[in-house]
Length: 86
View 1 (cartoon, rainbow, N blue to C red):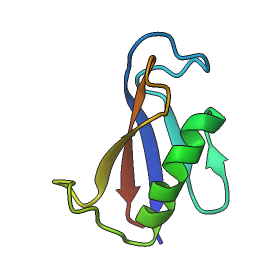
View 2 (cartoon, rainbow, N blue to C red):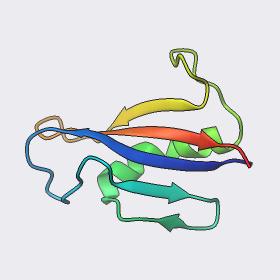
View 3 (spheres, rainbow, N blue to C red):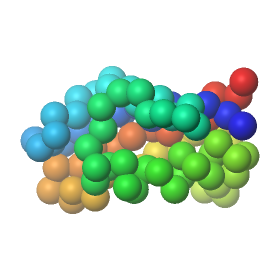
View 4 (tube, rainbow, N blue to C red):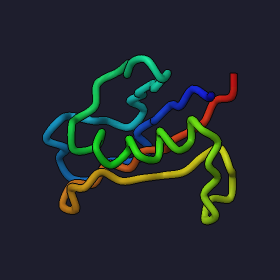
């Protein structure tokens, strides 16, 4: 299984949680290190889980990196989700 790191790549408007470009969240399979709002967590978690178990998304040019936005359409935060192989 792989470690997965989510990094804020862009943020438009005003994020109510306070996410800023460069923020990092680490998913190691046992814990989540870093701060993340529940709304973003709920949309990232399925992809983080899939990436930990080797899924490759056909629309991604790099099989170890995908992007996903939080559900706030007025103030979107875009996360880069990166698989880090052990």
